[in-house]
Image (cartoon, rainbow, N blue to C red):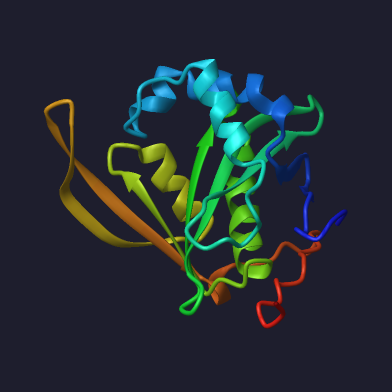
Amino acid sequence: MTNDDGLPIEVDDLMLRRLEYSDATDLFEIYSNPDVARYQFFTPWTMEQVEQFVYSQSDVFVGDPGVPFVLVAVLLAEKKVIGDCQITINSVQDRQGEIGFTFNPLFSGHGFATKTVHAALGYGFTRLNLHRIIAGVDARNEQSWRLMERVGMRREAHFVHANLVEGKWIDDYIYAMLEDEWKEPSTAGWPEPIDRSVG
């Protein structure tokens, strides 16, 4: 670990780290893709929107309640950002958090997203000291909810007609995991939790 946020974390052929300005081109490749935007209820992003997203992370403090903290997944062999995970602390007192993720479809089928989400959950539990992490997903997005099941998240809810998108009602699934349900890989070294008793 190189600094007080406990990052970067390396897991096999991937590295998780903070978002950097130089990541904008790789992120644009992801967020401008209509297939990616389809299940996230936004229109494909422009480069200006991507740059604003990157800039918004420049002063985010790790562990700020209510503020999404973005971890990017870098494929080490190509030094390329292939996706990101956003972790938000919803309640410090109750140690509740939420995760969301987006990946480049060109790199699917190799287990990269599964490794990244598992590691991001681990970061939430070990570094951010969360007890429970949830994730919401468009019920049509089978690839994403199957990924959640692969990493050990449980489906806790099915919200029928939760969103109206382009005149169509869309269902949502809610998944969750508790800290003692996350399994630490034997090869990974995880950072110490943030000490919230100081300051």
